[in-house]
Amino acid sequence: MPNPIFEIRTRASNSQARTGTLKLANGDVRTPAFVPLATRGSVKTLEPRDVEALGYDMVLGNTFHLFLSPGHRQIGEYGGLGPFMRWKRPIITDSGGFQVFSMGHGSVADEIKGRNRGGATGPTGNSSNGAIISIAEEGVRFRSYIDGSEQFMAPETSMEVQAALHSDIALVLDECTPFHVTRDYTARSTERTHRWLERCLTWHDQHGPADQVVYGIVQGGVEQDLRVASTEAIAASRCGGIAIGGSLGQDKPQMNQVVGWTTQALDRTAPERPRHLLGIGDVDDLLIGVQQGIDTFDCAMPTRLARHGVAIVPDPANRWRVDLAKGRWRGSQEPIMEGCPCPACSAGFTRGYIHYAAKAGETTGPRLLTLHNLSYIQRLMADLRAAIDTGTLTETVAAFSAGAAPSA
Image (cartoon, rainbow, N blue to C red; front, side, top):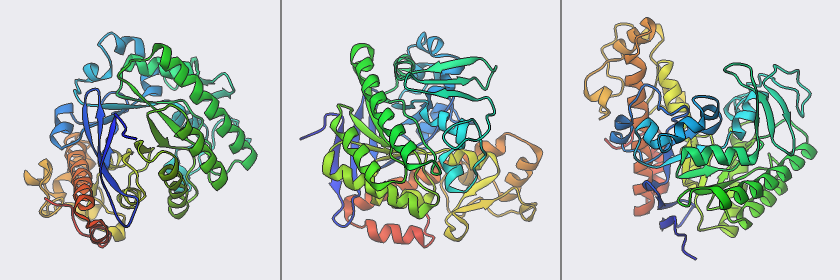
């Protein structure tokens, strides 16, 4: 049955990959697509016109952060997050559940990379740093990282905030459990997430913007049966799209396995609905995720690396990265990336200048690398879309995995 918000154009013959178009209130999104983070109403160091000029169709705003500051009511007075930040194209908003997980246990990226920083008392019994007060059926109590005040977010609260932000896509509130909790806790948490899904959808049916699409979120940790059951539960709901969240494992092979379980179940239960992979976006993750049938991705990686002096380059042996803050680049006249058409490279900025800016704390450096990194990822995604449409995805992925650069 055709989906009114998602039109699938091409399905790859030898993988789950597909191209299509998300048809949203504020415009179309070409898929598969990477979505830059505008966490607090800004893609860091860039203006909205910069992001649009790079070819991006959609950005992601964060409900948790915008709820705390400046507050959804203030943003609502502007007509929503788009008018507030002067972005005229689609926006997806995260629900705040991921931040609850991050305050208590670290981010998904932390987990995959083995950086568990501890946190609040929870299913693992870690000592509390005061961020999370409680996670219960009613919702989440936590202390604001801004002023320490006690805050409460229920499923209905998250939807109310996202209604005021008037994003094109709103995600339901979920609990993002870490890899190392027990199976029993994961099962109970996943069931609660399903109950929260129904509360979110009920609130949105009664009060939400008619042109806002709601995505459910698949949980289930690293347990195959729980992941498949969660996928089936979300697919059986009336949500317009499906996001994949929660713990994806202790390393990338396990993450790919968990995502694969989910997308295979979605091929069976909700083949026409769009799929979003939350918080994942390294180059190798994008290559694999596209083949697994993911339609949209979001990740802080390109912009965060840029703020630390790291450029994305076609160098898989070094995780597609070069750290220009390192001393070896002092005085270098090499371009950031040979043949790159991005605004930074085409203007002639060198690795030596980026090194200087990083060491001097000049904000021009992070801006230039943000332009470069986001340009690289956008051109990569455009090439992957073209490869799916022309039946050459296998060869294109192999070329990128071997160190080929995206098209200029």
